[in-house]
Image (tube, rainbow, N blue to C red; front, side):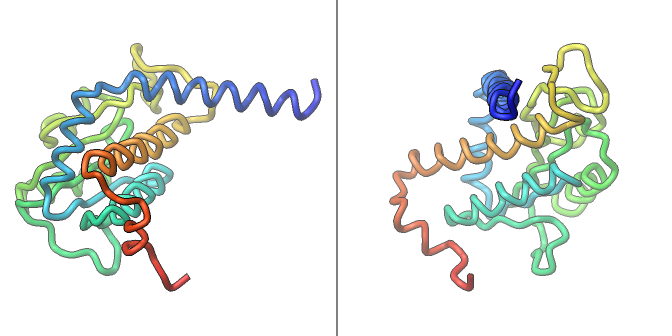
Length: 190
């Protein structure tokens, strides 16, 4: 098999996994997430590793839509309040830092908290108001998770990023936002 053929096969495998995964996310959970994003005064994101990198992309994209969005830990992070939303990304729902921040947000502000993850029976279920489940393999390998040909939790990270972009597109359409006008929110010191 040539490199080009290997690449075509790998590309097809990855895209098929992503399509299957995104199709398996409950639209009612996504609708609730969209509604919570739109009604929140501010939206905060927390995760670790590649999950946090994906969430940073989602945060930035929402900021491009005029949403007051922040990543926990940023130097200019404001205080969280009851009027805000905390989005916790953790496939397992057991990652120490996101779990601790969710507990702190619950105690400090009693804001709305959503867990985006794979494990519906994690400790996050007792903290979050609701969950958006991306049912892919995590380090736990639960029986009902979608298997992946990619290493470790890659499919979760990718799905999280793409799900955020899909939600952004839906928010643009729902609010009938003019794509050209969105540039006012884009960084201009580049």
